[in-house]
Length: 102
Image (cartoon, rainbow, N blue to C red; front, side, top):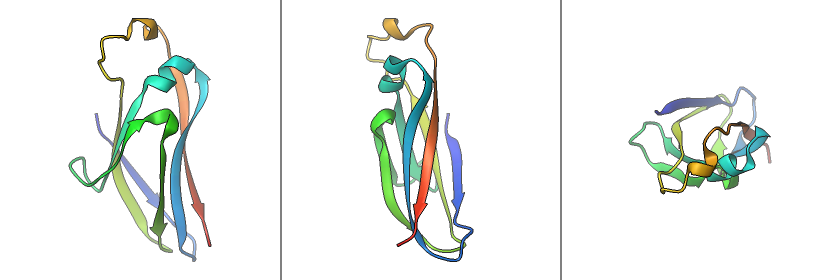
């Protein structure tokens, strides 16, 4: 299922927005197998990223002061027929959003 994401720069200066994912607990194998799809503005919007979650490095994207960027994402485990070793495993991860100002 798609998940809505909204990020707002509440500061007074523009910046560059990036996003990554970091495993915090659980199975390395499961984390390394997950895919993420990120789209701009709507589930059928412009594709920003589709690939492995563990190597996701989105951006940088410009975000002005008081601007909100929206998107949609979904995380999946591809059905490639070789998932038996991932049964009964779990993983926890953080999505890390950074805003840097020039």
